[in-house]
Amino acid sequence: MYAIIDIETTGGSYNEEGITEIAVYRFDGHKITDQFSSLVNPERKIQPFVANLTGINNEMLRSAPKFYEIAKRVIEITKDCILIAHNAQFDNRILTTEFDRLGYPFEKETLCTVELAQKLIPDMPSYSLGKLTRSLGIPISDRHRAQGDAKATLDLFKLLLTKDSGKEIITESIRKDPKLYLEPKLLDLIGDAPSATGVYYIHKEDGTIIYIGKSKNIKKRLTQHFTSDKRKSKRIQLEVASITYEKTGSELIALLKESEEIKQNKPIYNRALRRTLYTYQLCSFIDDEGYINLKIEKADARKKAITTFTNYQQAKSVLFKITEANQLCQKLTGLHSTKGNCFLYTIKECLGACINKESPEEYNTRVETFLNNHSYENKHMLIIDKGRDIDERSVILIENGQYKGFGYYNLNFQIDNSEVLRSIITPMQNNRDAQHIIQGYLRRNKVLKTVMLPKEKAM
Image 1 (cartoon, one colour):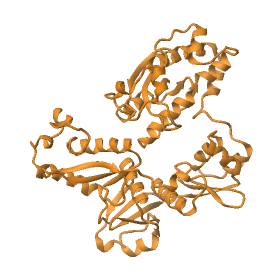
Image 2 (image 1 turned 90 degrees about the vertical axis):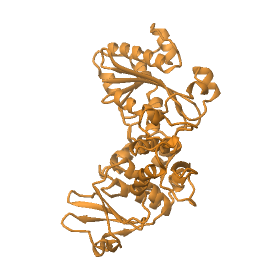
Image 3 (image 1 turned 45 degrees about the vertical axis):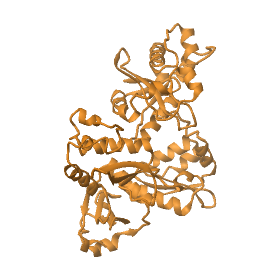
Image 4 (image 1 turned 90 degrees about the horizontal axis):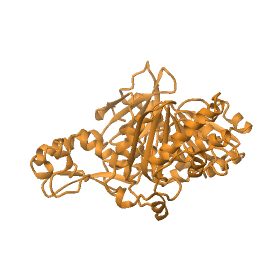
């Protein structure tokens, strides 16, 4: 099954582009079985030259859905598909970046019709989509618009399928992100790396750590480093002399170790993670009517945050889910600026706090329930998750709302008293980044269990 895709973007700096339009055709090799297209509000300005090229302008996108609102549909229509695009590396990168901003791993095998055409139809004067389809007599309408370009790419792919009768070139061209092959020296370096969750360290010849990373599959992640053609990866490939690693079992512990050890070691190629991990936070205040309001704000360590977010798009996406899950009011969570009722009240999912129909006392009860469940303040708790082996569990200790450290224990032992906890916990630094990692992880992922501790059992 194939998903033929075309994406139009805002233009701009590498990995800072936003999607303005997307079109996807689901194709079973014979016929189209599903299709989807939509304008997308990128929540950033379109570069003027892009607007001139595509005809898509900022005004057109003002009321268009944001990416998180169509993300589920994109996942559904591309499920179990090989992703096909004309310059697949670009479209796949843009799509992967958008899903990364939402905290969702979007990984697809890809096929590039540029590469296929170069192999199956050599010596064409040009392999740009417009000139190539014109040379082959393939009709194309709405050039530089997602639906028109995606349909032309689909028709081109059909032609390429017929030309590759043995399917040998197409099979050889499928790749898990267009990448280069692994060099022998680098292949030797990752030979002993485990396909397990943990933290890895890339050293240069004198032993200095030049990069620290974490992964749910260390070997796979190292392979990605050593086959990527990005500038930073190229430099790492030239300087690497050895690799060490530490299995953690728990992805959350891997994230916490990665963050702390980058701050301690300051590896030259981890510049981004030396800075704070979050840029926005969720706060609360009581308005003049007595209602508790939630509000997304720029990160400010001087203010008490309910939870923190990597970027504004992630913050809004999470706040929409919080609002719906707790039957809150979009006006009072800052998602709908209006003098009247909010949108959820119109569809009977808000009880009317926006127009004073629901009392502050009733509304605030639900807000406080949410705050109690999502705030670490004064809490004593254990986060239990997978260990490094099948008969082991990992544990993270939160005491008085502070991250104290992590440890491991055998399933045959009990850890419900302070003496046992004290013996197995490796102390770690508590800071806002660590709390951001823990809160964000628990929002997006399931752990085996969390255990609330009474004060006398905390360390």
